[in-house]
Image (cartoon, rainbow, N blue to C red; front, side, top):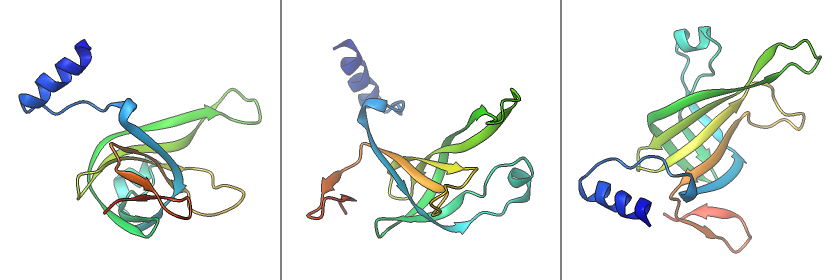
Length: 138
């Protein structure tokens, strides 16, 4: 109850509300990157080229701002005790104001396909389509 009142007070004062995982909708599907950045300095450090646009479920999204980025690491599978970066994560805001989490898998899946995935959408307006797929309302 106190949290809700504080969030309402912050919103009335015009403060940006922090990311709220309770309003996050899991997607977990491949995206098609478009206009991939080939900036030399990030790629020299092992980061993937972040697309400026991507498609998902027939909708095109343009990345307006990167709000947060981090890496997910795991142990090497051969047991040497070394660590390996498995995913590069990005919390982004699109040109139409939607907030999303994307990630890039360093090692491709055995089934192939895109190494870029849409993990979740914050405060998404998602409806069930007749074929059972999830689509963003336009």
